[in-house]
Amino acid sequence: MANGLGTAALEAECERLVGLGATRLRRDEPAPPAGAGYIVMADPEGNEFCVD
Image (cartoon, rainbow, N blue to C red; front, side, top):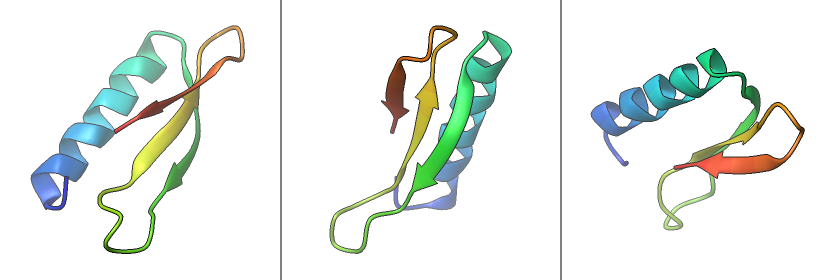
């Protein structure tokens, strides 16, 4: 997701998941050339997962 459209899609998915009860914890942006960043979230029970 190197372009703005990918970032927008990632943020939209994050917002959708928040609406379903998830919690946004942080966004990680690895240094190039590792690729696009990701968002770490937690489900209502506290289990962490990543959205990329």
